[in-house]
Length: 170
Image 1: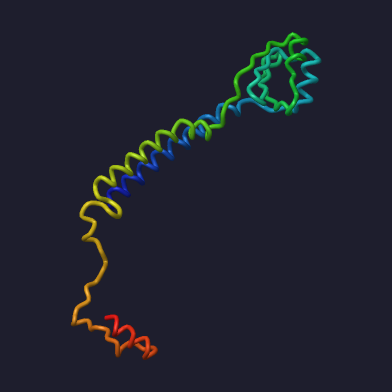
Image 2 (image 1 turned 180 degrees about the vertical axis):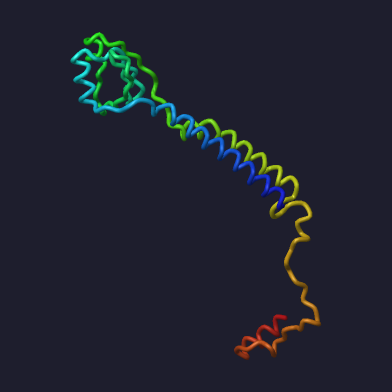
């Protein structure tokens, strides 16, 4: 039993490390460049200082005419695409990236569930848990013998009429 728990501990630790690696690896790629306000971004578009914009969900990665890269967050309901095309800005749209945690969960959860079900059934087949093969020998019941004493009707306190009725039954 101790070996199974030790093995399960190392498996959980291994998958936890993979999830953490995935979280930190995905998070580091989105933090490049500096951030500017959305209103400043729109002013730069109107002034003609923006050459390229990559729309990634709510995040806009902007490259200006000087080659500097910065990011801004698009407010909900705003669609700057028409304004960017009118200003002759190269626009590239990408599907919204999922967070590192969601990616890790969607990849690893089915795999972990299959392993968990497999371990559960293997444990049951080997007689682990309650009701396994030869499980009757693990009972904590104690056999009552004469040495430990017997309980008689005289030892039991109570109503005499109830004792009499019980003696008639027995």
